[in-house]
Every structure is written in C-alpha cells, then in structure tokens.
Image (tube, rainbow, N blue to C red):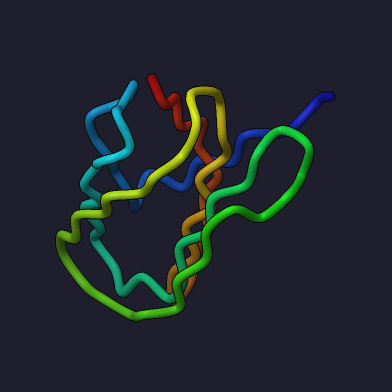
Length: 83
C-alpha cells in the first residue's frame, strides 16, 4: 500500500516509536486527531479542539499507524509506530 505522507510542519508529536502514549505540540488550533491502521481502518478519532500541547494514551496493538492531524488551515499525516 502506498500512502503519501503530507507534512505541513505545523504539528510535532513525540516520542515515536511509542508505547501508545505520545504528546502532540501544535502551532495552530488542532481540530481533530485520527489514528488509522494500515488496512485503512480508523482505530481512534477525537474532535476535541486544542491549541498548544496535548498528551494521548492510546491502547493500540504493536504496529504502524497513520496519525492524521487536522488544523484550522492545514492538515498533516505522519507515521506512528507502536512498540
């Protein structure tokens, strides 16, 4: 499966790889956070808006996921590795 990774550089998240707990730091208001597995199934979705820093603790099985971050004027898709 070929998935383009779009990077607007407005969002940062760490650590990666992660145990499922990671922090998102944003320069703009975040409108939604979604986690998608490589079979294109949405395994997490949150539309709680925030600005700045927010920590998530997701219970995901080990593997590679796509983290989809949507902001007011941009979006970004990054690879999230769960160990």
